[in-house]
Length: 499
Image 1 (cartoon, rainbow, N blue to C red):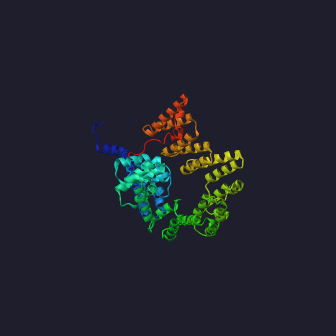
Image 2: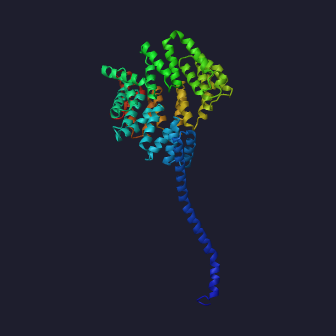
Image 3: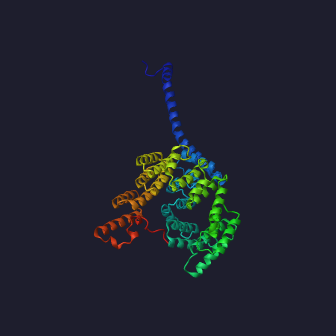
């Protein structure tokens, strides 16, 4: 055998190995392609997400909010961690005052890509949704970053107004006005706070400011008129002036038309029945569902339930959710629970399942059918599962109905299905403080402290509860006033933003 193969042998060897070499080459190229495809796909997905978010922003700028919401949701579904997608979806949800937006704003803030405007939007929404305590952390940071920024000081005044802290509200409203003296919204708010000031000069200046603004044909003028219309101490001459201005104002809407009715009844109480009957005859024939809803709610607030049913009859109420709710509220307020129960059983009502089941549970309770009520509450909780908005509503409704165990269950379910569980925890804490045992409250505070170990308010709450428990055991609790004895005060006494 030759040690060196001849040309024929070499050619046979090449032919034998060629398929293997080609196969290895193909595999190498395939693997290289796969490795290249992944980064390319990720890059494309990010680009597509940002493009959809940009389209949503453009549509918002044009006032086309439903279309913007579709684009924003598509962007978020494509890449939920993309800051542009988070911002776009949060903005569209904020426009509709949707509680889910709070979680998105917080996620955006945690990503480090939130602008100052984004952070303000979160604070504003939290205040608007009735959760001012949720806004305090971000508000503190905004004030620390820019302590003299008028917009931040204004937000602080609104936050403390929602918390019922008049001293802090006045403090921040005064500073906002000081740093932006040309802002007339700040001027009106501060004037409304000082309208009854014990200091003569400040009171006179405030009243002059409010009445001057009330003479303007602007949105701010309407706000000033609304403030004055709600004053119980106006003279007849002043009230006639307010009525005249409201009737002539070019921007007056349904809210102000209802204010006009109120002023007319205050000026001529003997004509109340005629004024209300005329209004009912007018609104029952209009084709504006929003206006009809506002009028029906207004009647219910004044305990004019029979008139609500006349202005908003059953067949009309069945057309839309916002019309059915005040109709059902009127029936409930009149104690017509069996009638309302039959309507809800008819399956024609324009409501989601959670609302129908919760209302049926209430009807069953009021008619003495405890087993049916329990079954309806179970179905309500089941239908709201993994739906944050519905769970939030159900928890609040159960609280109002004094179904506290169901309310706690709803808050717990909400805690388990949201990214940011702090608002639900806070609501559960307040409910437990009002209705639970000290041991249950201590366990909840401990649970929250494990999740948020650096929160000074929770540490203060735990310390205060331990102090009260110790006082109770030693018989010294009598020295505490009623508010301090109340567990509801445990997490509401923590300091606000620095002055």
